[in-house]
Image (cartoon, rainbow, N blue to C red; front, side):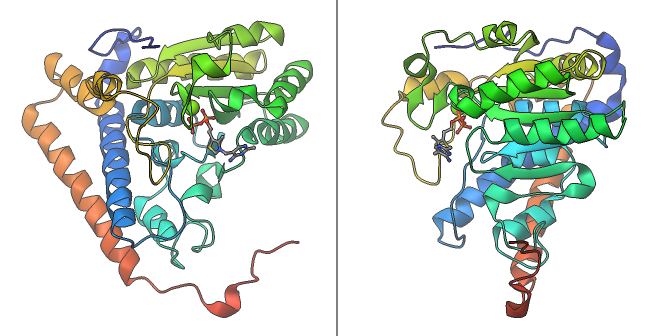
Length: 335
Ligand SMILES: Cc1ncc(C[n+]2csc(CCOP(=O)(O)OP(=O)(O)O)c2C)c(N)n1
Ligand SMILES: [Mg+2]
């Protein structure tokens, strides 16, 4: 098993983070909400109530939420086809996300995008992209705009997968970003697989941090199933990107859900999935908060129930919401 885990608990380098109860609460709430959101989406899909495809990131909540939360509100993120967790982390409202997935007018993109194209410009979520690797050149464009406008306190994070790391456009973008000194974080969520292909079959050198040196960039690395480790590593990467230019951030994690809407898991063993389920980032962080005496069991139970309620309400509202009007079909169409 390719895995870089700190331990079964969470590890916090900067203990002052643990004094920030609001931050810890938000991390837990967002990770629980992301998990329940995705489980509900899967349930709706299984019942035939959803159109289009879905890619769930169950198991990747710490990576998505931890990185998005370490961004400033005005920073930008570009997420992948597996983008629900970072979108929730950056503050996207689950009501609007659920409505989007159900194709409703009240969705983030008025029901035009669905799961794979959720965007929320007001929160710096510039969109999800189904073209593997495309976020890298887009992030260069965003960061070039930030630079040309003389904005000094803003970065753009491009989420990419381990599979995307081998796309030509990703290499070209890393080189361009480095040469131009662009404020980009190439956030590589290494969940070990590109569809059914394990990273060890897709590349001879599986230590993705080594890629950075080839472009004169710095690399950061973290246990992607530990939300505190992800948050701290992203904070470091962000500071670096603002000060020095682009960097690579590799987060080691795993999706315990299938690649897409249907996946018979024929390419991996049940034991491997179980090993990663044992380091479920939501349970791991909850246990850490309990063990350190930062939250009581009743408080965690309360957050758990309120995130259930939030998802149930999102589904209810989305089903009750109107469909987009037919004569709005060409609105927002530019070409
Ligand atoms: C340019 C391009 N090539 C192939 C595909 C088909 N495809 C969709 S997801 C995926 C795997 C991507 O793997 P990775 O980058 O590791 O992201 P993950 O799915 O693991 O989150 C592929 C090959 C695509 N959408 N776009
Ligand atoms: Mg992958």
